[in-house]
Length: 101
Image (cartoon, rainbow, N blue to C red; front, side, top):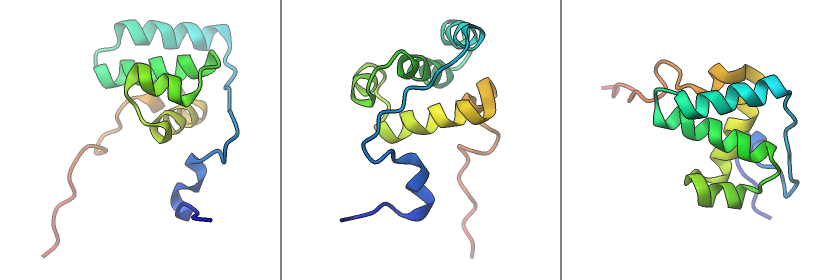
């Protein structure tokens, strides 16, 4: 059996379906940000988290949003730990690291 590296192990559910449960306020916040967010990536992340909480599978969400299964699981878990700000791109996440000489 091939296992993912340890630093990615938290992203794999080993076949279990995880359906996050959110309060009405959280769902309202996600829905509002999905419609009015200023960045398309942020809106897509909000949409995928909402779809997952509705009981959709990662495959169904992938077909709708274009995000991979691993990314869908990553953003759901990040939302659960960091809230709505966890779905925003943090400073420096998209930056290339300088090449060492």
